[in-house]
Length: 166
Image 1 (tube, rainbow, N blue to C red):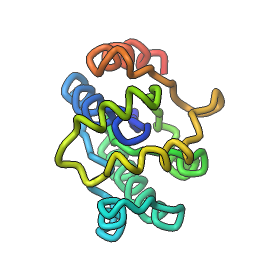
Image 2: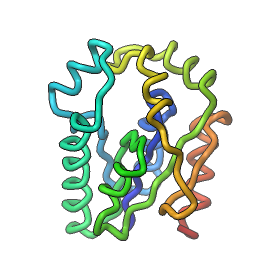
Image 3: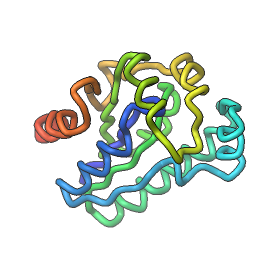
Image 4: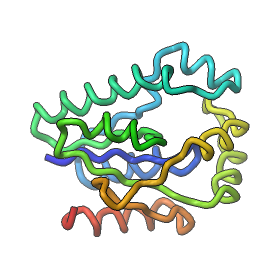
């Protein structure tokens, strides 16, 4: 069983890529944003960046989801910004099945995508705070970075090609 965490800053395409992978692989899918406590959503909607204390309960909820899915024996996909190494360490802790799909892109590409997005609680104004917190995936972490510039369909194909080796 593999658990994919599709990670990156807001606007990098996590939801689009994760949904497409779920459809192609037949794995369960969960939107990490839906696991945020209400206070986190309110803070972000008001334009206040989250701090580590805000994020730990959310990350533990995602970890609980990964554990539940592991017990079922099926593959799963969850979106989560997973901006810092310490967050990814928590998500990997005792979970050998976890692999990260890091969606990386330039600030310009992500800002353009955020400007075109509607109906999301995360305002584009918080992009810089997310980029400041971002610690890109390191070579010793279980996962791989994928450039978002070619668009979600190309990213999905690249992830599918990588998965058997992962």
